[in-house]
Length: 540
Image 1: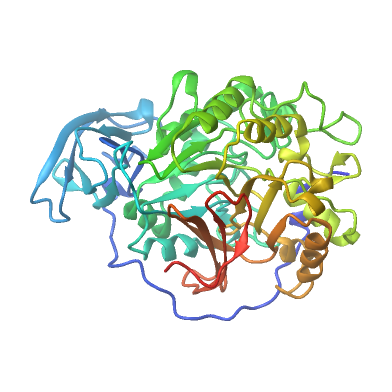
Image 2: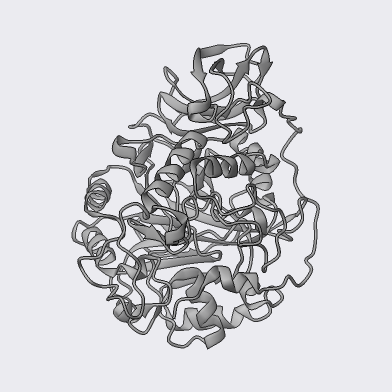
């Protein structure tokens, strides 16, 4: 049966200590002025254009979500040097309470494949400066793309040290966040083994526009998150907690009738997201979109919440019913045509929930419930928490069949959501994979920045009992190359013409604001192979 995540986590208790090592620092501190308390950010880079973001507080009463404060004008600048001696683009823009005093500017007329620096000015006060870069020209031969990969950053469950360590790197072309950038729960609703490390603001579950605006503001007050936004442009899509747990097209598990109409809550979350995030919005609020990195790679970012059918339960239906969808028909057509028509060598897919099929037939019950809670894996014929592609198998068959029929090679899914680390071949047919090794694509899953893992749900010390489940999973699922169920952290994705490599890094202690980080492992898929393999060490 499905697990009630909130009820379970509220009953958990924190346990265990962790080793600490010195942490890398993300450069000099940037003390934000009161006017720019939420930092700056950039995102969705194109060859000649990048999106710039900030939020200004023009008067003390113009706090996030207040609806108060005047309409004001800001100046923005883009330069080729950190001292802003060579400003190549500049302009002015206005903002006011109708958009919560957020600012989004599409800075155009830029050169492809170039690093830039940007800042905003209001009433003589300058924002912190950010660093960004444009994408290479569409037809350019590119030697490398390197991305930070992150997911599931729960404020109440710990500190964002993963962001700090990524911000300390000077080699990233961008950051890919594949969902659960923030969480909707009230104080105490979802912490670290049931313990609230940092309380949410507002203290209640967020329901209306002012609530969502205040929650976005709280997350963007974090210094490590601000540092990573300053360091590189972001590619971002949402999962469920930007709205509510287990969101589908007509509602969510964490939305009850006494909380008002779902349509109103969804509209509020949607508006606040586009105000506060450096993302471009397509027609009718569409967020699924695509980016090129020369001839090396094309990145398709999916939206697996807006159009999906309701998740199945043991009594509500078959996850393989062809009438059910996780993408919706228009997005599926967009995805399949894009993957088969592009001339990019690597087809990267920013994917919020796991697509690899998994069997749990030999897993002990204690792991079964915990895995079903996090991942939505199938138990019998129905998923325990059918929130991943395992709950929408007709769509998965259509997508993988398209890749196979059209001989599309080098499709790599980059995924989050499940608070654990995985690397896998994605078989056309899991039952026959053990002998024919017929793989349509590969998937790399990053762990959570802070959200509870399997050891947290089981309330045991890290790396004490989870290796039993990891061994059992790999024994039953031959297409799995790597499983690690306990650690928090981030991944680095390195793309070259020869291979895509992913390195996992794990925090020593998510409860410490100065946590160190340790290298975990590296996996790669070679050009044309459709298979994952272990490699000797990280890219850098």
